[in-house]
Length: 312
Image 1 (spheres, one colour):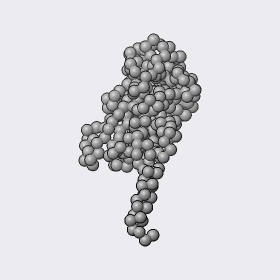
Image 2 (cartoon, rainbow, N blue to C red):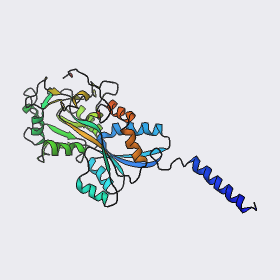
Image 3 (cartoon, one colour):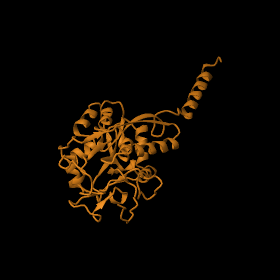
Image 4 (cartoon, rainbow, N blue to C red):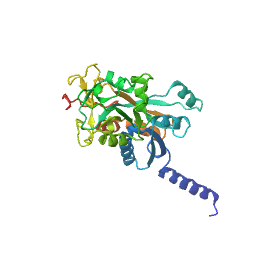
């Protein structure tokens, strides 16, 4: 083509066509690629959120590392990921590290989680007080008969998902205030392993997130994993059927079930990209309903309150 003006017009038009057609993986709130890090405790919830988000937005590729909470924060501070899901907010020193790189993290509560105490189905003790939990974690109560005289005088073997998990950190800081005893404590790697081990070992007292033991076929979340028994917890020194509660959704908003904690999405993305889009989705009506269905409490959407007493 000899006319340079016509050639220039054709090139501009062809470029415009490509622009309006769009790059399907250009990083936007609903397209592109990103990798996030999630406290493994919240894996069931976040897997469901990511799966639906990707189903709605076909050009979104989201990878997730499910790790102990301490490693999740390490990845964020090392700039290996730009968004994490955890049970605590950033400390002042961690915010300073991010700000030194011109990153200004946004921290948003998305849910309230409950830490469930689980035992073998044969365990005779199904009630426990917060005072007793603290005594167990600090080594003052070491055997099952100290909780209930009908139980054998076997050591209480504490089992956690991971020694660096958010559950362990919460219990150490909020319940034991730094006096945590590791004499009879051990850790697996994942919540699923805690459930499986507890289901086959009568002397174990396991600690897991409620979202891992919810019965997905129970729309009201009034039953749990059939392999284990869930212990009712009381805020009173003397636990009774009347003042002890299991980690049902109805008992979390008013702290009737005392072992609850917040869940946060922390986004340090420098501009509005796919991580920001995922946060928006999780906090939307659809995203909050996924949390509601998982058995824990969404931060925004209304919850269903069921006025019944749990089976003990």
